[in-house]
Image 1 (cartoon, each protein chain N blue to C red):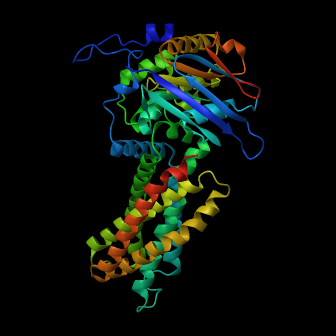
Image 2: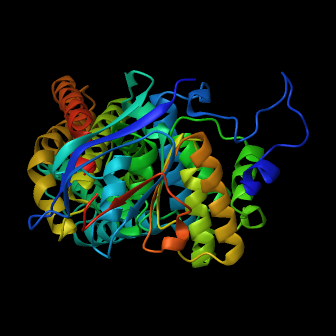
Image 3: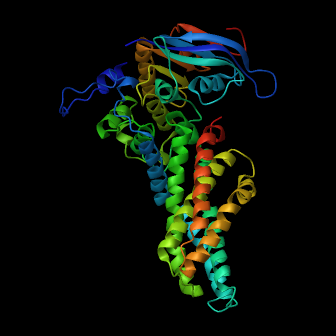
Length: 257
Length: 208
């Protein structure tokens, strides 16, 4: 025990509030400074963000896909390539197709990478599946917002798209992005240990995300026209609530052994 | 503080074929419990089941502090585990890894305390080095630091001396000796030199 008793004790400086206990004297019950669920989820989100900033794998692939798809759409359609009477509807649909497929290249990596690198075991050992799911959902949500922040101005510029009610569009993006993030993250946990995970993810996610995407397209169309899309926003809010509850209840079964 | 006890009751595990082990029962409260057996006899699987990282096909594992049965996060913190499958974030340094795991568990993570933990396994000089650059032995030392991260009274160590140099072996054996005096250490290994007169021995692929 030489290692612990000789080396494991803090020597100096002494912290305020009395002497500090050595490693040997501390016990699990000492973790009275334990943070709550939100802090644990935030720690996981911050870790994913730090990892992404260092590797830039998801960000590069997502933004490259978004740029390539946007360029192709702009060249093929341009600001006047769509018939006037159908332009608004097609632009709303094109925007969400662009956002969905861009996000789909990055969001599923949430859990898959943990399994591929073998870090999932350590994560399972120290924290709950729900905290991991919440943290990864949060990171994916921020990633979606970053994609939207870059893609939407470029989309508006290249396709001559105008939005009469930006606050309504922001609400649509917030609810649509959150729903997309929570469902994608949960499905990522579900397929992380499966074979052919990319194919499986697309096959499983498509039917689950269709109601959200249809509502998001309808709401975007209304927001672009200047109206506040109350009905589709309510549908999206309900979808997000149901998806959150479902993911929370099934997180453990999806990710743990 | 009441003592912490690990109870395995009628554990069995199979992966579809014949069971790796069945009807395995033991109680670990203090001392060293050696888990031995040939390759593929289920040592790693047993330790993962005890750590809550794998599901048993039958039986149950209970951890009690005094009379109270532990569950959830308290249970997770009570069982320290390290095994050959344990991997770390390669882009992060050793100290960043430990800090993250403490935070993810909801525990405070002071810089000096983390350095102390690395010092205990002889990794303090490499605290700021990326784990991706670590040798096998250094990664093994970090695994031991991970197992000790929450000062758990029950330690589950799967081949803890694999890949270590003589100084590393000495350190880990020292840690095991200290921990077995304070609580229980369940140690799985193929090498009889890893066990110094264990209080119990569980032989897998044979009789208990």
